[in-house]
Length: 255
Image (cartoon, rainbow, N blue to C red):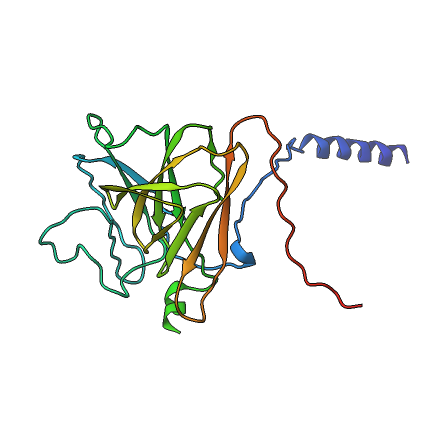
């Protein structure tokens, strides 16, 4: 009996000696599911939205494109002047909802034809489809502003086919450029921007410090279209009590 007990103890020591210490690791994975659905889509450099190219007038920009999709691809940038080039404007049906934007800024030695803004803020308007865009065709930004300062908003309409309205509550904007070209200043309380178009807007933070809605929605004269309004909030910097979000409208229940 004693010999059996000693044998068991010896085997236990041998087994424990052969165990390699290990450390538990925590792995975190991030999955993004918009509108609670999954879909396969074309991306650029595995990014959506695609990468942004920053360039100034006079710069030489070389873009190497490798098409790994199963169909032909065309890339088109508004504001790039290509005289006598037949493919500078795309024909209907060749556009894609997933792409990349390019922002042209003034040369280092060039001044603005308007008072220099405190900051430039890109704003990308887009849409999202649950299904594949081609199959469909076949069948929240939170900028902060300081009172009294002027901001240059670079607005890009990256939706598929809709003209978009854009407005900031209680504020006016001044249109000073479109598609990489300066324009005669036009002051308005909203803009309408076409698909693929860019607009440069001057926003003066001249209202009482608070939170103000920034909203955009599609314009269409047809009866059957998504009239969803997307919103963001422009926040003034400072010490104040922000307003409470309005309660959603509900229908009254009969007694």
